[in-house]
Image (cartoon, rainbow, N blue to C red; front, side):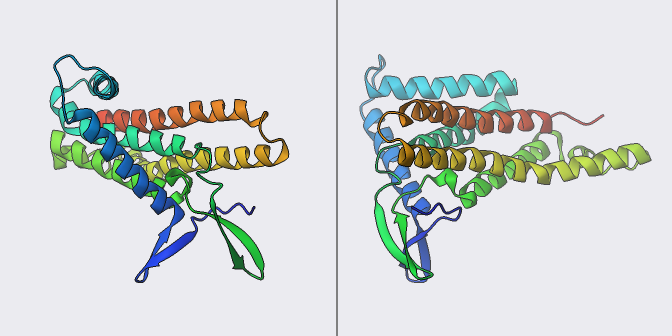
Length: 245
């Protein structure tokens, strides 16, 4: 088995390449939509079963959002995005641990030798996905900051000509906004990709028994990475809504 950093193309729709990570993401989105529909199609005032589980998840994320932001207006606006971030990331992280998720595929000829190409690959093990999530997060941070404190006051965080020191600090703040995209995307991608590579190596060396503790570790890491991405987004939004002095 060859480990590839890039997501592999499975088939084409016209000229559009469909990679294994895109295919896996599409399936997970469908599964999440179906689970949500089943859990909410017959809602009751006293929830039970799947509705109870879904409400518990939503209420936990809702409480976290309000506790960090401490502004009901802002929290209400960003809650759907924050909930989507957390649920999408954690489900994709954990989906890669399902038996057969990365082990069912086809063999293709590349550079004169056969290479195994899995049909499904965790979305967060594809750098394109994590960059997209990071860009979305950083763009929303800027929009919320401008909307809450106004474009003029918000721009003073980056362009302050009142003194040379504040001007230099503003430039550093501006650079840090671009660095957020890099740190967000590579942190999530690196942890998920490294975990999948570790499991592949351990499974090939000592199958059946030894990988079990590592699966437990990856479940924990998948949860932590989803929480870290969500928390950092919340914290940066909170900071964006504070006027620079």
